[in-house]
Length: 193
Length: 193
Image (cartoon, rainbow over all chains, first blue to last red; front, side):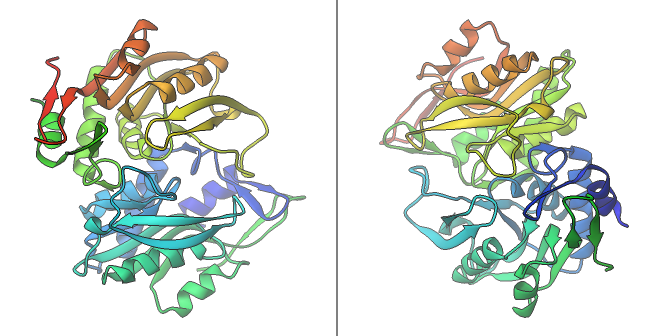
């Protein structure tokens, strides 16, 4: 097991409905030393890519994306979930569905911050059905930028998202892939990578 | 002028309705080196406080709070804006109004992550009417924790929030306080600190 799988095993809590709670260290309370280690690991896995920008989506992707961007020495851009009066009318838009919140949102990135020269590393905390990632990929393509890779902290391997994204031919790295989890026993089964 | 005021002067854009756009470096695209410098500056200003946790609110506070928490070597907790099925029913709740989005939200922190032993540094990107901060203070108090200080990146000094918070007797540090801005000329007037 790698450092992340060990932490999920230790502090993750399985709830009914295939919900994995990692809110004590990843997406509500954040263990900053772990975030830094995740950032370094993404840098190691995409070290051969000439990344110019890290792209994520608010809110829980932001912390991880910050530390990944720091390793690459590039800016981080986060897509916003609703149209704010502080955003330019000049935006890229994609529609995404949230597994957690069971609703649809537009995600928005200002055109100023992505362009055809950008080589993008997309970062997010979870990959389930892949809708958020497909939205971020669509926005990157609309900007004419290339998606050099996608770094995910936890992939739910029993949902379709990972397969959909890999079928697109994108280099996807998930630090932990969960093939099964049992809310009664609390057992989490990781995919051998 | 300090490093932040210089950056606001250089890259901030004043829009009608007292809107200051800093989305090229602070709250949409993030300049990570600047985030780190902000984190170090908050640590310097609250170095005498025995901080156990950094508290912020999603989404644009998260990046800054991460780097502040890193300097103090403590976890970061971010309040969430709506009730998620991934959150415990055991939460602290406060209602806050958003100046930017012109709506009201409940903000929520799981009871697990704040307790009576915590000495909290609250971090946020903007201070305008102070509603978000009052919500975070209310949540801290509900947990029995002490608010050791509040660190703000940009305070709109012409709005009431700063005065309200200072009148509460909380140690508030704003890295830049804007006393006036003019959308026609683009001139930003900083308060001497």
